[in-house]
Length: 203
Image (cartoon, rainbow, N blue to C red; front, side, top):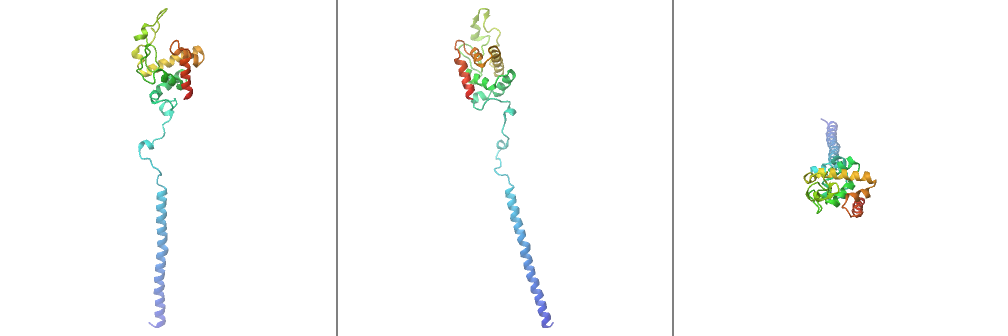
């Protein structure tokens, strides 16, 4: 091999080596970039603030789902009867919040409430028996047609019966204030009605 051929051979070998290293740099750089890009995309696509429990993952409960239509401002002692209040109030065309206010004043939400006059349960309805049996009107016992104490201690029954009574009084008097006056304790004037209405407006 003469010098010219050897020089050409050296140039070819050197050039091949240079091209090899250049090709490695060119091909490796995009691979590194692509890996970084995929890593970034992976983190960006991870759920942010992922729920840590099934409760957090659940959608907020709405009044339509629970059948409850009273204000969240009422205490838990009243909220526990919300479904029954809403059902009875809707059936008789009365705002559920007004019934909730009556129950708050009457019993504070205690289904076992029993007044000194003999009224029973959540809406403090006078029964036909117990102390109420001693109330005598001109035509006989005043509450002879009323349910028994045992019936009125049932929360759903008590609410339904009390709401039906109040709805009848509203039809008779034409306005909530006079209806509540008749529903409340005898001889209290408008004090009871105004107390219930004040609570109703505040919620």
